[in-house]
Amino acid sequence: KKPVAWQQSERARRVLDKVPDAPTVMPGADIFDPNSKLNGFAITSTRTLDGSVSAVFRAFNDPTKRTWCHDRLFTVRSTVAPRMLRLTMPDETVVAVSIARQGNTRCLVTVEQSKLADTAAAERARHAWKGSLERLAAMLDE
Image (tube, rainbow, N blue to C red):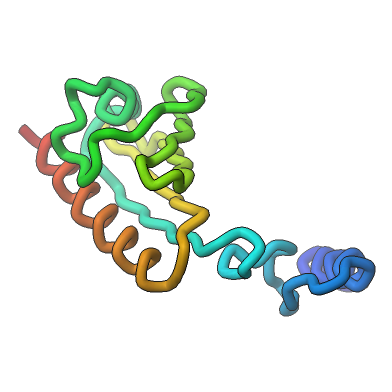
């Protein structure tokens, strides 16, 4: 019997064989390539922070606490408090933020920004979120 990951990639290949001009799927890859022209480009930035999940959630959700963020003018589209937020940035890109508890006073924050125009925009976004998460960590330490 084949491992589950192989079975999933074979199913994905069968589905994509029926779709014209579909992105190429490598074994073990997701069905939809975030770097394909269909979805634009996407980046992910992750950081473990010393702070509670609710404090991190408030830092994203409360406009008065966004001094740490490189672009404070984002719009919160939806939330599942205190674990997830969906944001729209001023440039119309989409950001998904997930906050996972790691013990009582730590959490793992994952920021995924998608619908970026090109690789240069993706690199700028990656660098901006890395700096923003560092500033958020410093703010939580205060």
